Amino acid sequence: KDTNEVYSGPVFNIKGKSTGYIKKGKWNGEFEFYHSNGQLDGIGSYKDGDGSDLGDTGIPKSGREGLWKFYYENGQLLIEVTFKDGKPDGPSKSYFENGQLQSEGTNKDGKEDGLWKSYYENGQLLEEGTVKDGEPDGPSKTYYKNGQLFVEDTYKDGLRNGPHKSYYENGQLLVEGTMKDGELDGPYKSYFENGQLVSEGTWKDGELIIE
Image (cartoon, rainbow, N blue to C red; front, side):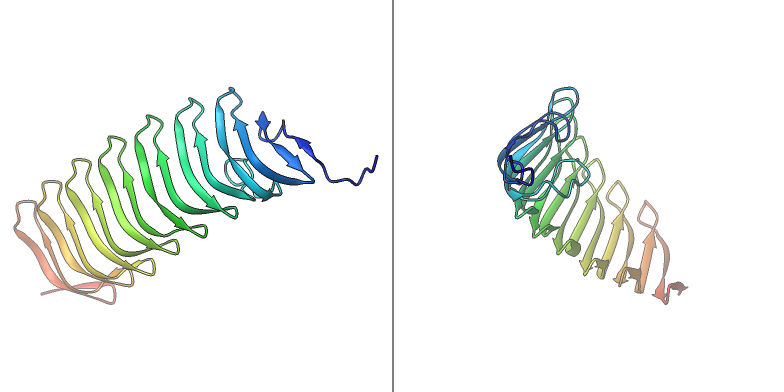
């Protein structure tokens, strides 16, 4: 037998118990990976993968193609994400261990891209905003657990740029100002929870000049 022949055959011991088939060193078709307690850990397909790039899960990323699903040890769905050429590309969702949706959005060529939303474990929206090439870019809103708006900003190239407002949990305006390259810059006002003005001034070079 040629000892230099590239392995072909079933897979049993990658990331614990596993099922799949390697032909001439390439991973193709559907593979299943299991937690040590026997519960399914991940399932998805490969296209000419080589078993490399284990990442955080210990499951090879190389060659992942199409929809992949990953699970908690209790059997609850953890993540479902679409891959192309081994990189996340398309819809993605993650879940809390109780089954509640934790985040949802889209990826492009391995990076978050487009509208992304995250949620509290009670199902209430936590944050929503647009992402470009993995960086926040565009309108962004963050919410309290009761659904009330907490902060609203606009991002450019990963930094806050433009109008900035934050609110008390009762909906009353807390702060209003303008952001430039991630820092307050320009006219600024802050308020008590009853709506009374606390301070008014202008931010310049990292300092608040009170009027």
